Amino acid sequence: MYKLFFKRILDFCMALIGFIILMPAFIIITIYLLFSNKGKPFFYQKRPGKNERIFSIIKFKSMNDKKDIDGNLLPYEKRITKTGAFIRKYSLDEIPQLINVIKGDMSLVGPRPLLIEYLSLYNEEQKIRHNVKPGITGWAQVNGRNTISWEQKFLLDTWYVKHITFILDCKIFLMTIKKVIKKDGVNSSDNLNMPLFTGNN
Image (cartoon, rainbow, N blue to C red; front, top):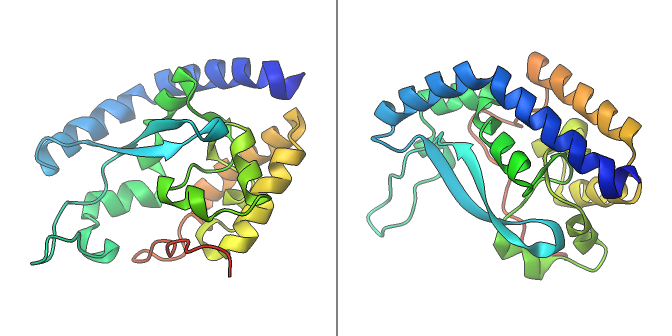
């Protein structure tokens, strides 16, 4: 009953309350990034959601769009801005995703939405992660996030999908708050993103 009905109600109510509480920070960061990112405070990207339905995830823009001479985007560490590094450090770049939760694209807790390009690379077990809505935080995020392998991350994601309960969601939510405050496991490195998933070997 919780997974099918109450989870969505709780998501909507908590996301709406959270967005209202964080509105001052949202406005300040938006205005600052509006100027520092030349009119582009937000980052939009297509991601697969529940049942692989595609939606646009919203985040604060933490990187510039600089490219090399061939027109390819420069590596992460060369595009991250000082402001971007700060808002990522404290997970402030995730605030706009509360809008995704309010709209119903995402949940507060669930497997993180990954790139569309990965859809064809999953095995049957890994595809289970798309049986529920993706989350702002999840079981894999509070158990290592970028410090664990893709295999471990998918195992944690599928375990969560098979064991969703209100108590588990509360546990993950509280663990997330603790990790954000301690800045523990938020990123494996200030200059390194998770390597791209290339499939199961």
